[in-house]
Length: 573
Image (cartoon, rainbow, N blue to C red; front, side):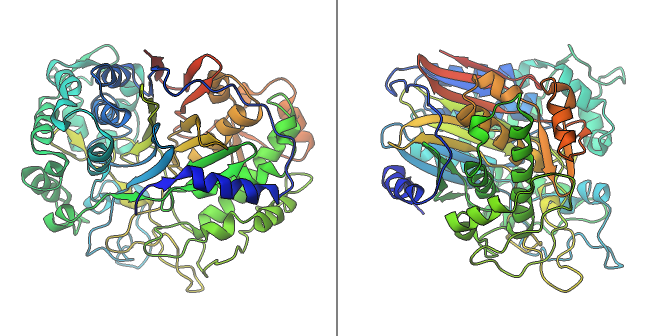
């Protein structure tokens, strides 16, 4: 599909929005001129920000810089993303106002079936056993997706985008405290043979914060991709090495070189819907972006915009809207090329009205049931586990083009297996291990050959009703991504907080009957106020935590922010 012209869509959406009662609209920051020449990179590691800015300063576009940022993150933040993983990108064209989505999600081998993660007894495998196996790896799509986007929106030659990460791989980079913590963690992938070999110094000790880590194999891989193009990862010696590695050990993959050679990234129509005075655009399924839009649509029917981060009622509304959002996402979302995902039904005003009315006055009751939107298929209860190992970045170039990209190897260090200096993903464990429910109804996210697993990744771009760029936001965090992104958008669009403050708001993941929260980040009285409304909060956030990055147009130009929970930066030039 070709890109989606937002201006025409915004007019139609504005008319539709007028039919729906809405709470008072907040004010919006005055827009800076898209021709101001300011450019910005917000990413999870300072070296990745450096690499992106160098490309921008050399005359590169936002997508050109994204190639350099991803290649650098795969080296310095290998626990989160890399050449062996997948990604979703939402892209705004500063000249035309068009928003395009790119799908670089991994695919299952053609020979994979619904029993991929079932043992000989017909029961699901243990999660760690599955993650460490060759079966967990899908055909990687991030590099191919970047190649597709760069061919359409790049200004520099592909071969010139890898100099900085190649240099860092050859000369070495300083291990950060976060990476050192992952190396020393109890994550099973950190103890896998390839990871142990990579992260162990000649004296037999593990790399620690402050050590210099070199990766000449990664540099060689980058040189090959730079010289031969993005397909170098999917054909030839690198592809052969991937197939050999996933075939090793018990529970070997069925992946073939043909699976890699036939992989195709997709340029797809984004899902865009109005939210108050804005329009929010996200990728379609298997991304869960449409669920994020459902969460916003439910909140639009409340008075949360009149609240604020110190008001317990505002957080109560956020929590109950989150539960409804997750109930529908967990039931219906999967790869839309294989299953019917009722996106339009979930986002219809009448359905959102009904879901908003389903929000309780008090908490503490049972978990909400999924609704029945128009077009809902008969699918079973989902059995997907989705740990975190992901990153997000935002790039704005001097022409006003914007990249909002979430990229991942799935769990920490992916499957723990390496090829060519990079980790292979364990993305297929994002499928439901159980292909059907006890009553025989299928899971929307069941495994199938060539299918892409459901993803919580939902990189967002926000426009005003005239189609001008307002903000871009996204986060890693496994299934908590939706809650993190929803929180950030509420902070930015409803509460008009500075970007850094919006990203630093307490994380609350309300999914099913549980409510997990960063209790120490609440303003005084908020936790007590929620308890008075019947909510029991469990501390701790989530296993991975958020890694939000955002850029917004403010009165004086671009404003960027990085999640204080990680090591990222937002810098402009």
